[in-house]
Every structure is written in C-alpha cells, then in structure tokens.
Image 1 (cartoon, rainbow, N blue to C red):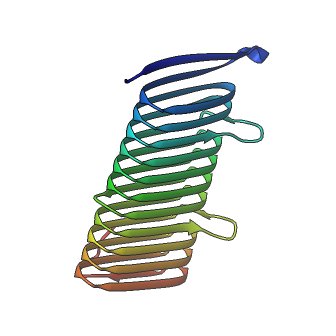
Image 2 (image 1 turned 90 degrees about the vertical axis):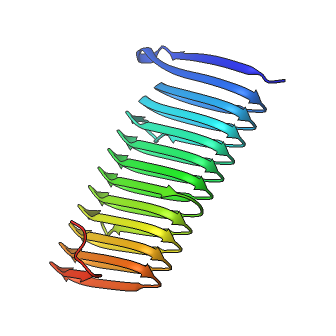
Length: 280
C-alpha cells in the first residue's frame, strides 16, 4: 500500500531570530530523507517512488537546497557547510528515473549548483569551495557521469550529456574560469583542467562532441587561455595543453578516427587544427 507523508519542520534557535525551514514530501515505500540545519536555511525535498534517499546538511544563513526525485532507488546528497557557515548558496537537484545519484558540496558563499538527470544510473558530483561559483550538469540517458570541482571565485562549469555512458570531468582552480562541455552520443569523454600553481584566471574551454567514443582533453595552466574543440564522428581524439598566458587553440575534426594534439608553452601562441578555423 502506498503511503503519502508530508512533514514541515520549523527549527528555531532564538539566537538572532535564526530559523530553519525544512519541507519534506514523500510518496511511495521505504523512502528516507535526513535533514540537519544550523542557522537560517531553507530545504525542500520531494520524492515519489520507492527506496529513494536524501541527505541535506546546512550550516550558515540563507542557504537553499531543493531536490525532486521521481522513480526508484535514487539518492541525492546536499551539503552546504563551512567551519563558520556559508551564506546564500543554492543547490538544486532533479532526478527522474532509477538508481540515479547526485552529490553537491558547497563550501563558501553565493555558490550555485544545478543537477538535472533523466534516465537510469546517472551520476553527478559537484564540489564548490569558494564564492560565487556556478555549476550545471544536465544528463539525459543512462550511465552518464559528471564530475565538477571548483576552488576559487566566479568559476563557471556547464556539462550537457545526451544518450548513454558519457563522461565529463571539469576541474577549476582560480578565478573567473569558464568550462563548457556538450556531448551527444555514446561513450564520449571530456576532461577539462583549468588551474595553476596558485590558480589560473580567465581561462575558457569549450568542447562539442557528436557521435560515439570520442575523447577530448583540455589542460590550461595560467591566465586568459582559450581552448576550443569540436569533433563530429566516432573514435576521434583531441588534446590541447596550454601553459602560459593569452594562448589560443582550436580543433575541428569531422569523420572517424582522427587525432589532434596541440601543446603550447609560453604566451600569445595560436594554433588551428581542422578544415576551418572554429571557435571564438
């Protein structure tokens, strides 16, 4: 027999009139949500199905965590904590299907994390350490995986994956770095690293892959580097490695089993690969 449970918690710690609000709605069997709040935060967790799980941990003020899960055996974990408490962080999860898993960790202030998963056995991990970082992960299909790790200020990471068994890894250390990954097909892989010894700044990385079994790697160490890769077909490989400042690299490959490697050390270098110049 199906059960409908709606619980609203108002946890008041009268110190400074701080008040937490947790709203939980669960429809189905053997669903579980754990919420732990300290400060003045808001969490909303809605589940429909069976054996879904949720964990929410908030320390600080004006943090918002929202999760919607539809299906069976999905799991969402949302942590918005620091030793002194963070402020104005926002974490959102939407999972529709079975056995999807998402983890969002936000340590700092004004970070934004968004996960959308439609299908089965997809995974998304978002770690944000700093202020005003933004991560988006959208996955449609089965067994896709996204890992987004940000340390610094005002970094942006966006990943879109459609169909099955695609993987995106985005690692940003520094400030105002931008990484975009769009994959349509099966078993494609993107790896984007933007960092340096003391963090990199103002780096831009873009990958578009349409087809199957394509691999793109973009490593940038320094400031104001731009890497662009576009691959259309199957079994293509591209690698862009830039160490320095104000470097530009572009790859465009169409067809199957193409390989492009670009390595640039220093400043103000430019490389182009493929039939046409592509990218900004």
